[in-house]
Image (cartoon, rainbow, N blue to C red):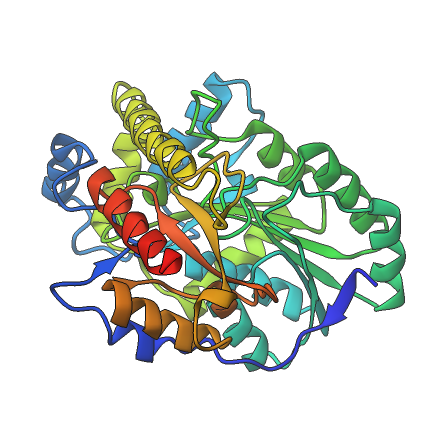
Length: 394
């Protein structure tokens, strides 16, 4: 069986986050270092000072100027799209919520997750009283999914929606595009919704364009049962000025715009303004160059870490995109097999705070798995892993 029902579990990590203090190294963090990889202050200041809409409601159904700029940018780059094919919401979490709401309104009951499950999805599924299914992947091995077997099990389990994070959360491993297209065609024929969570996407290390993914956009806007959402603010570390774009067919986007006004309301004028700059020359080139440089920094840290762990018992996945990688440490080195207890032991013995990937419904029988933020200072990553290697060798 590829697909299994998810068991109830806790996503609460307060006990672990409470371990963070001024002396600890938090290597599973979600923010970058404050003094490095800072996006253009010029663009940020221009956005803050552009107060034209500071007294105006800025709704997803509106933002005609911003959407026209984005449409023009896409058309200039040979993506045939109109403003009816996409909309703008306040952040990635909002994009996931409002997208799944469209599925829920069509009486969806059975949802499949492929790979790690971001914790807000699990809480959202509980609110919407969904039956959740899961396809487990070993992210430390080459990913292979038997498409024919998956198709059979989708029908057997009456799956009505698939949620796929690309890349797989915390691992920086992308799903094969050819596989995704074949799966999408099957789902379209069988009226199964596919939500492609690309919030941490568009950051492949071997490409130089990080402003759009034409293949995924064209896929989403051409299908009735597909929704794609992505966030350029994630790629440039603007967690304080976030936004997200949602792509789909015109009917889907029109419905999202209506529900967004009801459920989410207005975004801020700064969120709108920064998108106006990002999708206008020369600022789009500045933005893309910043992402390229940031990814080179992350990739360099990954290569250093991979070399450091060579010929050790630690596992590191074959990361190929983004700002995170996934690590596995044999549980035999710890006094407990429970992930939360292992995280506490690592903090106590090494002064390092990690978030167990079991929070995202990723379990490994023999390894304690956690993500590493590759945008941390290089010396901090090296120091952390030398300390953990020393602990495991004693």
